[in-house]
Image (cartoon, rainbow, N blue to C red):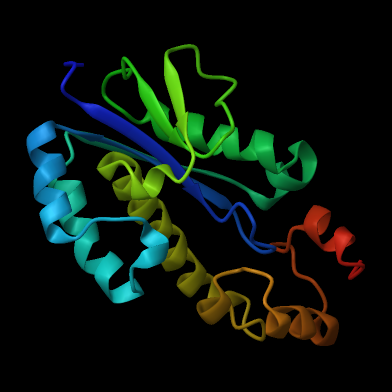
Length: 193
């Protein structure tokens, strides 16, 4: 992989109480980083769902390569969220055509299973276009899954809360019980199980 490429990785859904954790990795050239910045690519949390959906095809078109990985609720409950997040990142990385020479990761935690150079960037999604792009790819992919799961798991407003533990979501769990896609390891802390 040429040195001018920037390889950013980010996860989404780490703090949710329902559904898998998603990670995405995006490989960008200098030129395409600049183009995506002009289009308005930034930290996915600062963008509206509509804007993220508009940016996604542009990111996929302009990336030299990308990968998406996820870890299941069962893996999160059995292994813990950090190991499950690392698994989802490694799954995303395995989808790349070439192993990146260096990885930049959003957040303070090292990707322990990765045996190559890596740099952790706190708030990386607002500092690096490749991480911001990865955050958008992961967020849109996970949100789309949440909207599809709404049909199967109605009664929890998953399409609205995206699996996060809103006050409303917690009160719906009290009323309707927990499903097999609720993270039991997270709900134990809130005394719901």
